[in-house]
Structures are given as C-alpha cells and as structure tokens.
Image 1 (cartoon, rainbow, N blue to C red):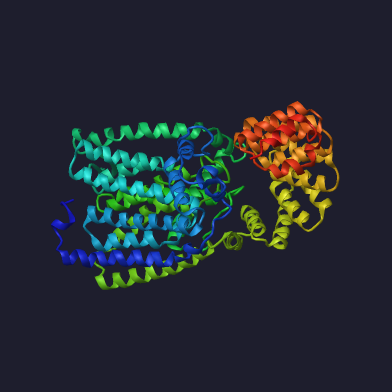
Image 2 (cartoon, one colour; image 1 turned 90 degrees about the horizontal axis):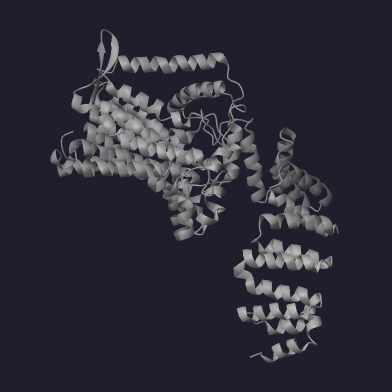
Length: 627
C-alpha cells in the first residue's frame, strides 16, 4: 500500500479507469432492470415486510423497540439494522415492491463498487480489480440476494462487511484508536444486519496474511508453518478480541431467542452425519455453480440420503485444494486467502445448525463467499498472457454472465414464475410446489391452485395449510360440505391456524349450525381479543341465540383490549342491556358512548335493539340533550 490513489495517478488516468467501473455499474443496473417490475413473494416476505405490522406501518417508536427486542417478538434472528431499513422503505414507499427491490439493487451496486475499491487499493492492479468487481456484480448466483426483498439482510450486511474491509485498509496505513473504532463500528453494524457476519473476523485474519503480510506462512522442510513476523505483531490477534466478545454476545442473543429455538431442526430429524455430508458436498456444488451457473433455483431440497462416494469425493476435493493452496502460498498467497475465504465464510450456513426450511445449499449463501473464488480466478491469470486476449476473454465472460443474470432475474418476477422454474429444476421440490399453489391461489388462479393443493395433500396428507386453502377454494365454488371436511382436518392438525377456524365458523353459520359457529369464533376471540370483526361476528351469533349475558361479557372484555373502540363497544353494551330490559345499565353505557363522542342521534330513534328504552324517562331526557 502506497498512499492515496490520487498520489500515483493523473486525473486522466482516474477518469479512464473510472469509466470502466461506471460501465460495469451501468451494465449491472441494466441486467437487473427486471426487479423494478418484480413482486413480493410468499417465502418470508410476508413475515419480514408485507404482513409484519411493525414493519409495514413504517418507522415508529413501537417498531424500533420491536426491532431491538432481544426476545422472541422480533423474529427468529436479531437483525435490527435490517429491519429498520425495511421500515424506512415502508415509511417512504409503502408496500410498493418496485421501490423495495430498487433499494436492494442500490446496495448491490454499492457493494460491487466497494469490491473494486478494496482490491484496487491493496493491489494497485486495475485490470484484476475490475474483473473481480464484474464477476461479483454480474454473476447469476447473486441474483437471489438482490431480487428477493427478504434478502435485504444479505446486501446490507455485505455493505457493512466491505465497509469494514475498506476502513481496515485505512487502519493498516495509519494505525490509531479512531481508525480501529471505526473498523469495530462497521463490524458491529454488520452483525446487527445479519448474524453470519461473525465470520468477518476470520476474513480479517486472512487479510492479515495477504495482502497485508502481518503473518507469514512458509514451508519448513516441506511442512507448512504459520509464523508471526515479530513478537509485536501478535497485535493482529489481540485486536480481534473485542470483535470476538461482541460476536459471542450476538450468538447468545440469537441462539437464546425463543423463536429461534422453536424453529431449530432437532438432531433426530436431520442426523449430524447427514449434516456433515451435505456440508461437504455443498462445497463442490458451489464451485461448479461458480463456473457453470445453470439450473439455479430459489430452493434446493435437503437430501434424505447422500451416497458415501459423493461425500468422499467432496472430502478429497476440499482437502486436496486446501493442501495445494498451503504449499503454493509462497508464490501464490492469493490462492490460500481466496480458498479459505470461500470455505470459512460458508461454515455459518453449512447446515450444521439448522432452523426452519433449511436447503441443501442456497445461492444467497455465496454472496460473500464467492469473492474468495473470484479472487483465485482473477489473481491467478498467468502474467505471460497478453493484454488483448485477456480483455477479449473478460468481455466474453461478462457478456455470458450478464445474459444468464438477465434470465435469472426474470424468474423472480412473481411467485408463480419463481416456483414454476424451481419445479422445472427439481420436480421433487415439495416446498416450491406448496409455494406455487399459494401464489396461484393469491393470484386468483383457483383451478391451478386447487390441482396443486390436491397434489400436495397426496404427498403430505398432514399439511394443515393446504387443507385450509383447498377448503377456501371449495367454499368459493359453493362446495361447503367438501370445504368443511378440509377445514376440520386443518383445525385438528394445526389448532392455531386461524383461517381454518374462521372459514369453518362462517360455513357453520351459513348451514345453521350456530353452536359450532360460536365455538369457532370464541376460539378466535381468545387468540385475538383486539379484533373487532371477530368480536362482532361472535356477539351477533350469541345475540341471535339469546345468550345476552355472554355477549355482554365479551363486549366488556373488549373494553380492556380495544380502548380505541370504546365508543362503539359502549353503544353495543347499551343495546345488549336494553334487550335484557336492564334500563339502568343500558343508560349507563349509552351515556358513556355519548360522552365518548357518539353522535348518531338518528340511530337512537331507529335501532330496534333500544326499543325497551324509548319509554323510559332517562332515555327521553337524553334525547332532550340533542343539539
């Protein structure tokens, strides 16, 4: 490292080199143009954004408290910075998917620029730095991280990751407390965007080996040795201690969250031997996908069995490359750093610890890890190759990657396109089949959705959501009896599935099975005591059955859970007590409604439920107060 860029480049050179960078950014923006017309998808977008009231209502103090909550309320992972970025999007743009996708793309463009700046600053090699930027910006493996709104955590955490690396360069140039604190701050913000940033500590140690040469790896009688240049240079290890401490805190927060524990896949469901085998074979898959990015999908189903020879082949490959890059370190240190960057940054997402619907591997896992392989490719180009063939080859590679990325972005237009493509890649992908049925149902393609729900239930007869959604389609077609069978199965399989109870209650009411309808709505009100629609339906049924006391009890309970609706609730209580001929209580609640702002005087004279009050002196006196 030899000072600032401007100290050894003329303005003309800066403009010429900047033009190449600008061209790649423009091409990247062009090939990702399809995200402007992409929609939200059913996989995690509702959880993180569209159906999340703390996020979808925009930035608020309640939302901020929720995002920083260490408990289960803020979701399975603690990533407050990411959630705040989603809130800001909703605050400015509402739920316009184009703007949310555009925000992801902006982060990707900035990240691509930062990749170039970092490698250019530490190497002064414009051509290699530009190529690694192009590979990162245009490789189709990175489409998932950009085109999926939920993957904001990927692009945002990578921004702080690369910011940490850039500030770390400055820290190497000019040691000082403020520079160190800035490195630590960027690292902390990255961890608060996504917990997997913890492997950045390992990456910084790799950078200490090369290109900063704070450690030296050499061969001693044919055996590799890691040597600290001087005793003073144990500081590269000591300066990482605060990073490790904060990392431990983040891991504790995430692993102790109740929602993470509830979603964690138990060992008896996926044995550790299978997890290790899949983690090893995934390394081979990722390398193949970097060189041949075909057949990419939103989801790769986790295997139930992996042949022993695949595991052994993957093990030999990983160990073989590892030994090779160690023994060639003296001549080619970038191979060592690039390879172990790739291997190390996939450990956190290897599946040894799993939660939720864990895939065999995922494109998004390679967003940072791929930089290591790109480093190996770009820096290992033989110097004897003339510039012109290198430029031609680089342009051809970029054109191919840009075309593949353009096509891949198109699959993310909406859930139907995305999951259909996933099933084309792997027709045994049951998760994508489920999501395709949900997407078709939401889009109003009920016949296609019904066929897929039926297919799902033939494979997964215990799938409660499929029963519930198929029942809703059948009810819409007027087949109430068939629909009720599926709703009842869904309620038995998953009692907390509200949609099944709601739709079953509506059918029971329609078929005059009022007692069963009341049971359904009572159950729903117990779970959602602040839902006015459920309360209204429940009390209407109770009133029709003549259970006025119970209706009054639910209204009075709602006064505590829905204080914002006190005027309406007090009026309804007045009506219930009027029907019970309890004039005193009826007038008490009616006056409370009036004091709260009720002003529909016309209803007082027309509402049949208040008939028993109209001859009372109290009611007449109340009417005389009419303005």
